[in-house]
Image (tube, rainbow, N blue to C red; front, top):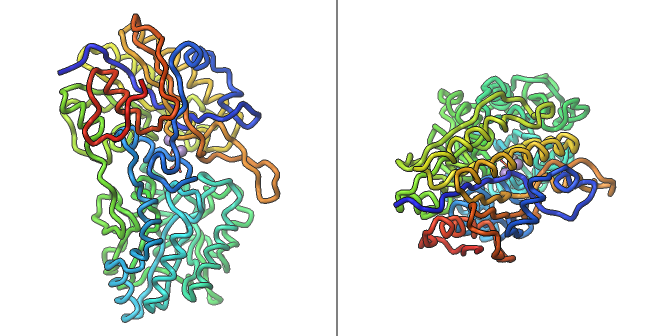
Amino acid sequence: MTTDSPGILLVLDGWGHAPPGPANMISQAATPHLGALAAGHPATLVRASGDAVGLLPGTVGNSEIGHMVIGAGRPLPYDSLLVEQQIASGRLAGNELLTRTCARLAEGGRALHLIGLCSDGQIHAHVEHVRELLRVAAAIGVRAVWIHAITDGRDVADGTAAAYLSHVEKFAAEAGVGRIASVVGRGYALDKSGDLELTRSAALAMADGVGARVAHALEAVDGAERGDVWVEPSVVVDAGDMPVGTVGDGDAVLFTNFRSDRIQQLADFLVEHLTSRHVTVLSLARYDTRAAIPPLVDRADASGGLADELERHGSRSVRIAESEKFEHVTYYLNGRDARARQVEDHVKIVGEVSPDYLTRPEMNLPLVVDAVAEAAARRDVALVAANLANIDVVGHTGDAAATLLAVQHTDDAVGRICAAARGTGRWVLLVGDHGNAEQMSRPGDDGAPRPYGGHTTNPVPLILVPAPGRGSSGRLRADGTLADVAPTILALLGFPPGAAMSGRSLL
Ligand SMILES: O=C(O)[C@H](O)COP(=O)(O)O
Ligand SMILES: [Mn+2]
Ligand SMILES: [Mn+2]
């Protein structure tokens, strides 16, 4: 059964709401289209962070959980929350896989290697999880724990890597075991664009001690000209210039990121690279790697969402995004279920890719808009679901001027998409997945404002542009969250909310 009220879901990635101000690039930008839509149509703010979406209270939102909750129609306990709960309950310390592996290492005098992003950005990892793992390994008697620290500068302010490395060293001293053996910027270690040369240089520094040689971990970040994201793969060496902690036969590797998408390229590379060394490889949470890596903490069920409901009603959807956000409007919107569905078409806009789009804040938006307009013209398509990546991807550079341009390009694109919707009799629901560009600076330790390109805990705007002739009256509930988006979309399409959805329509 299709629908007589087809529509378009537009996720504006990183589009958060905050009072106007000099650091708010959403309010600073010229956005005539978004301004007119907000003034002339039903609009509200919805919560997109913390417990509203299945994260610890006070935790910034992120694209994965944001798109998962938009799709699921209910808050989902995110992997980071499940890890925190298992630490707090002591279950992680008693995890059978972890304790059995550590016991084998202790008995055989072999080493544990912890590989992960070292910051408290809580998007991909939390450095406090390393503290707990060091404590557990020490308690079981593992005598050598080598930490392969990945520096951030994207989910947290740039220039903070040294502080986080010092935290890690403090945790190791506290536990009585552990030492940093390599330091690599996330630009190398967490590439997800398929650039395996970046992945290889990170992996060889961690596994084989190949890279710039430093006598101490902090040397690797001192004076890193390209910031924390691009700290050159560096290897800590001893007085004899020998790497202190390469991966040896019978060792174990534990990836400490709880989010999969950016670590899986490195994990797959290392699983293959270490095959001959009979290394046990584990991950803190489940990864979508080619290799089967056993997780310490498994993920929550996210089935019964929008994708399942559209399939049940026989309603076709077309998913459209640039490479950076393609998994978000397909895999994550579908609840991390990769099953291909007859009623879904996926359109990945590749275009030109650049490392940070500082010089191309428009990214490949024109191609995205063309694809949305083409899908909107199809009468067999009930829902077009697209992600406009610019505000978040350029926002992560921390460059306010470039981000302002990204917001303006996004506004132009929204204008063109709404014109296509009017021409094809479709409603448009616009929503952010978490905040970013509305807060482009944060006070540093000294209290002075410093550039900040990470996510926020702010609510996100949601605007409903009714289909032509369907009027613009009506108000939207003011207390909503991202969990209410799927029930609202289903109501607009003429369907009831899914049985698994706790969210409720905002109409
Ligand atoms: O991976 C990234 O790009 C950022 O660390 C997180 O951004 P996202 O949650 O918007 O993907
Ligand atoms: Mn996002
Ligand atoms: Mn982001």
